Amino acid sequence: MQHGDLATPRSQAKILWRVAAIATMGSLAFGYDTGVISGALPFMSLPATQGGLGLSPVTEGAVASSLIFGGAFGAFFVGQLSDRYGRLVMLKLLALLFAAGAIGSALAPNLWAMIMIRFALGFAVGGASSIVPVFIAELAGPKHRGRLVCQSELMIVSGQCLAYVASALLAHLFDSPIVWRYMLAIALIPAALLYIGVNFVPTSPRWLVAKGRVDEARDILVGLRDTRKEAEQEVREIVEQCSYEKTHTGMFSKLNEPWLIKLLLVGVGLGFMIQATGVNAFMYYTPIILKSTGMGTNAALVATMGNGLISVIACLIGMWAINRMGRRPMLLMGLVMVVFAQLFLGAVINFMPNSLLQSYLALSGILVFLFFMQMCIGPVYWVLMSEIFPTHSRGLMNGIAVGLFWVFNAIVAFVFPIALSAFGGMTFFLFAIVNIGSIVFCARCIPETQGLSLEEIEKLMERRFKGQPALDAQPCAKKVSASTGW
Image (cartoon, rainbow, N blue to C red):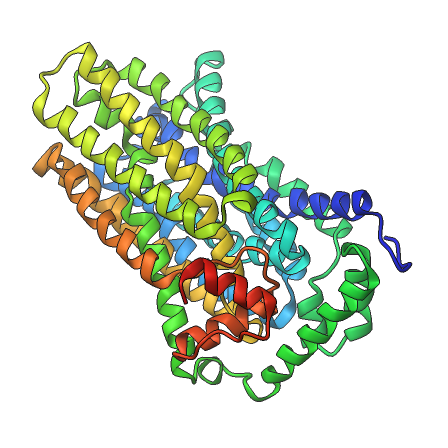
């Protein structure tokens, strides 16, 4: 890192991208572990004498959902622990848990061992989903933060795509009923990369300031910002904001003001919004949806690989667009297009006879849905989760919000096949109605945070949820106020 008056822009950008690449190994493991189960379950359902675990439909659901419920606990507790012990320490511990989970699930001797191991693995998945975006946001400056945090979402969908492809290849190359163990073991690779990589990235400067290590934080920021003046200004803002924490150390003291509760409810609402789109229902159950149109099993499984590919492409476009379009416009555009895609899908399944045309139209509706979901809504959600909560309680509030995000995930994953069986294509009309409500929620409650430092966002949120007008004296606040109508 360069510590002169002017840091080389190319040098500091390379450092930030390296930080994001290493930290998001946790997101890659997150994506792989959530996606691989779709390929492993058919083999795990074989009798124990044939190399499987003898799963029934009920126990298949238990194995799949155990990771999701573990994610809820992991997001909540790891968020708090990262406030106390630091993001890097927790990332290293999560890497060990990812590795242990990969090995343990690959060697699991029976159903109950698998459920417990998948729950522990879910704890690591939830923890990574809670702290990786926050860690990146605390290191990146305002002009880089959107794209770098979006890299976390890119790695999640890349992990899911990798899981779909790896499962298909392994099943094709190895004619063995225990191939599912190899599928699960591959998750050891990103876990190892994360554990090794965290030794080569700096600590969060905001966490250092919170622990009284201001000089260390200054040295890190000088190497990550364009000028020393910019770094010094950011250090002063962080010190000012962190002084608040001295009188707010416990869980309840951190949330003792009404505006913080309102802000937390907005974060929880965003988690409900993203799950209420039904995205994970599509990721988990696309083969079931396509088979309901008459498409064959093998064709449906191959078509599901398109979900992973389109998600990666869309996320790459979202990374390019987020600092050009802004958070609010992308979020609202994504929700509008998701509603249209769901209405289209509902019409195709409800009003067309089973045919090859119906299958292709249904697949096109799913892919259009996933394109706008992963380009606009998914990336913006993780960026906002890394930005909107104040420094003194970011880990706690992010942990609560993301923990409930995982609870909503589990509910949708459990309810969707039941609703599809009971209501058929009408299920997608129900999703569309809920998402119209999400559009109203986001239009009323979500501000534009593009171009603001984390400290400026904190002041904006405090004044907004206290019902106070934006400060005209702050240029950034004026810009945001103009763009949001506040």
